[in-house]
Length: 485
Ligand code: GLU
Figure 1 (cartoon, rainbow, N blue to C red):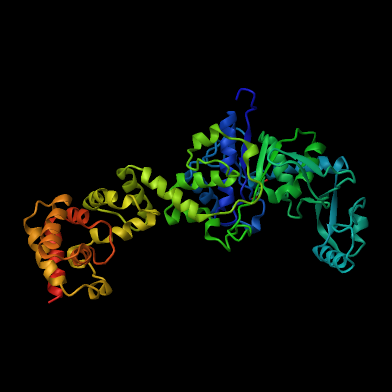
Figure 2 (tube, rainbow, N blue to C red; figure 1 turned 45 degrees about the horizontal axis):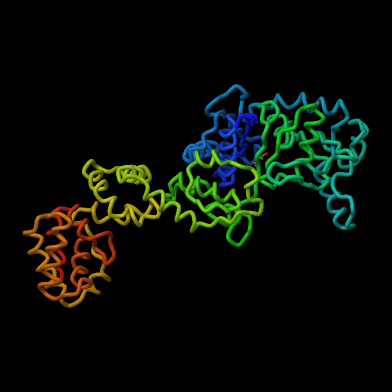
């Protein structure tokens, strides 16, 4: 570890909607590498595309990263020495670098109107031109010269002058040598005076001391442009790690339109535990030759190795996530699980003290099989309604055997006299109904279950009766009994 250079990594999402799961995926690897090398992980908000901004999106980014335990060391909400960390607050920073590039002849003004550019593109498509992209009409012209020609726009953009010998390969710490296509004369400053992503990302990464750029593979084709900018500005290159795109089970790229799991908040809404989601993302990132699937973040950091990163689009397999979630749910203490359920339901359930106590007593009976936090309360709903408000599922009542009334009479007698604890309730009912009346357990307990929980399938019955207590259990048994006539 001593020979590792402290990495400064960053995740740089654009606040254009609900945070994407890919942001957490990058942040996880950023943070792990920063921790492994004793460096820092930075959050930068890339909000230069003002038309696409969505209110609240930035807060959701903070919230979801915090939820996953992937808090940045520096960022707009936590501060740091390299701020501001929001690109819209750095607009004056970029301009001098753009000027410097223009003066050095690496960049030029372009006054071509969007109509002309669209026409040019159409023409290139029509003629199946071998060279596509901007035709450099404005290069070497003054504003006055250009203004006399057609397709002139008052407000120019600034473009990079991509040289013929632009290096098209670069070294990637995940992929080794990577080849990228020849870039077009990329716009670096837009007509509204805002830098494009390409300009801003290079300037910011440099000024923020980022030495390891971890990002999605969709940026591979942009990297030669970024490398040119670094070179022109006389700056050291960072290391690049292009992570694979996460894919749906049909191998298509994971998108918010097609897959709800592309939205980071979805995991929270569904009742996944953050530790399960984080573990799942760790697994997705690696090629999967490791037998040990359950791993803490600390262990992930300890064993961190870029060479293990899976470059062929990892498949987003929710069954694996469900399994992991079940595992993490079982590893919680019942008290912790109860607290998580309460926190999960926060928006629409404010339990009384008595209800909190019921929940604490009930959690152990569902913990073993619970997959998602959202299923907990619906499974236990019968413990939180008054006896009078318990609704009996009509189908479950209709499906009861003919001897249900008899069974309930016996159960009422047992419940009146037995010591009211799980084992004693079970033993008493069994002795009286299964052994005494010769009724198979399946029929013996179905009416009792329907009376107590309102339905045929419920969490464990005798435990439920103990939690409800003798009075409430008796009331429920008598209610169903009287309904059966
Ligand atoms: N703002 C870019 C995005 O939203 C960041 C890409 C990068 O990490 O360089 O994906």
